[in-house]
Image (tube, rainbow, N blue to C red; front, side, top):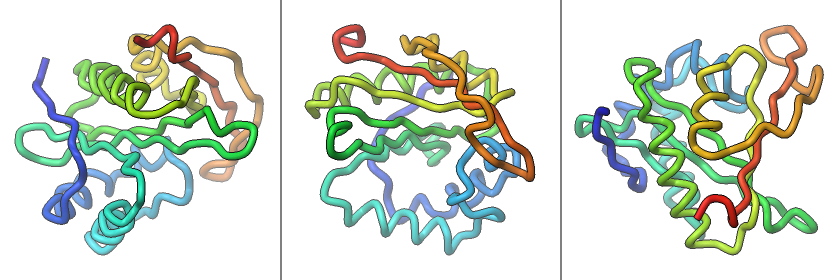
Length: 170
């Protein structure tokens, strides 16, 4: 497997972030809040935004000395405060190489050990089989399908739901 490092984002990562994330295939599997086309200004703004967050919930995936992906955790509030949604992407040259599965395992382990979160969940758009498989190989279990739960690219999509409980991850 290709070696990788999980680390915090740095301002110097902006060019690689813009290069890799300006990819319609990635955008097609992310929320519309992610800009597309993705510019160097978008990359710099993202890095500035996460650097000032009180709690760092974004992990940069570094491969070959270059920022090539992200894993983020969005913690719930109120009665869902012990849950977090995980989101992630990896640059297309590194798809289907097992990197994301290993990065997910490491990030989830770190996040569980550093927080009091007891459940991490993910929603994957229909058709993104590689993402579903990465979650399953990282220990997540599929809990169901939310039909027509998302509207992306002019069509309704089913969302496949996955979860991992802390007691099964450690």
